Image (cartoon, rainbow, N blue to C red; front, side, top):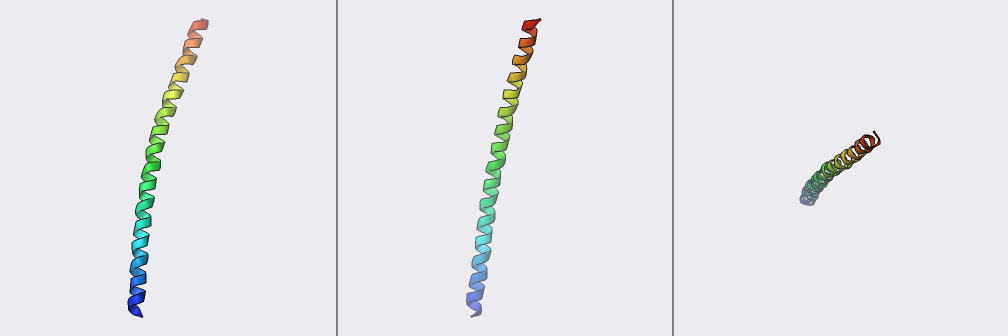
Length: 60
């Protein structure tokens, strides 16, 4: 009976490690997407600011 319990515990530990590794990969992917999204937003906001400044200069 102890061997079955040991096998179950070993399987549980293996499953926990697998899930943790999967979560780490997902977290890395999400963080990478955040970096790309922030760069895109910075670019768009910068472009909008330049256009706004250009409009102000044109009106002068």
